[in-house]
Image 1 (tube, rainbow, N blue to C red):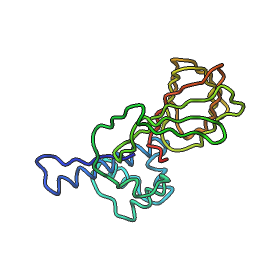
Image 2: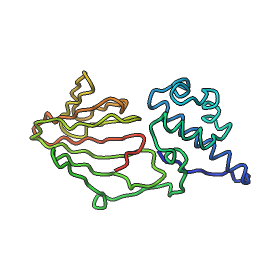
Image 3: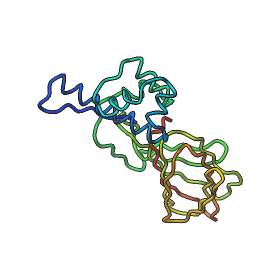
Length: 203
C-alpha cells in the first residue's frame, strides 16, 4: 500500500508534516484492520501502548523510529512499507498489448497485470486465466489484506480452508486474504477471473 502525501496549499513545513502524519496513521490503521488486529493486540505483541498507536493512527503524533519499527514488526511488514510516501502520477493507463503477463510454471495459470506498478498504488489488479485441464488446484498462500474475485467466464471452485464455493460467470466474492485459497477450474473451457488484492502484491 503506497500513498501520495499532499500538503495543504496554505501550509508550510509544519502543515506538510501533519499531512504525512495523517497518511502514515491511515496506512497503519488500514493494515491493522485488514489483519483483524486490535490496538491491544499491537500492545501485547511489541509493547507500544494502545493509546500511543491510536494517536499515531489519528495523525496526532509522529512515532519514534523505535516505535515505528515495533509497529511494523507487529504488522509483519518492513518499516519502509509504512513510511514510504512517494510521489506518483494520479492515473495509470494501459492498453492490452502493453500489459505484462505471467505464466505459472506448474499449473499453466496466466496472470495479466492490469495496472502499471506505480509507487502510489494501493491495489493489485489482475485478470487470471485457469486452463480447462486443471487436475490440481492453484494455491494462494495466506497474506494480510483483502481479495476480491469476479468471474468473467467459466466455473470456479474456490476452497477457503474447510469451505468450498462454486462461482459461475457474473458471481463475485470478497474475503480476507489471511485465508489460504485454492482455485480449481470446473468448466469445459478456460476460467477467467478479475482479481483485486489489497495491499498491493509485490511481484
